[in-house]
Amino acid sequence: MYKQIILFLGLTISGSTFAQNKLLDDYIKIQKEVLCHNKEDIFKELSAPDIKEKPVWVGKDPHGKTDFILLVNERKNTFTIVQAAESIACIIGIGTGNFKGNLIKTNQ
Image (tube, rainbow, N blue to C red; front, top):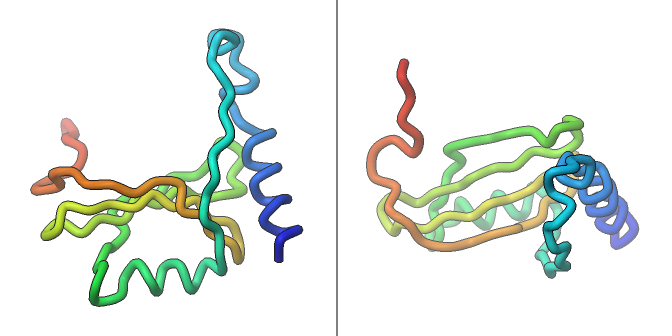
């Protein structure tokens, strides 16, 4: 399983559009520890009664290999950002914010 996690993160980081963009040459590269586990278990935990976050937005990486999922509990104003592949998911961010109403206003 650790080989899958390393491969998953390696493909995601090395395939980044940011790394290929000349405008971002001055950006600083950092390493961040993330929590990864079986995708099904992570989503089961995030929807459990004590967390109750639900997906409100899904986006694909530029190569279509992973999904970025924003899960929100509007009542508690908590969120989690997950990056997921076929069987592995990693929590890449958690926090709080005001999610009342639409997350993103559109002209439609």
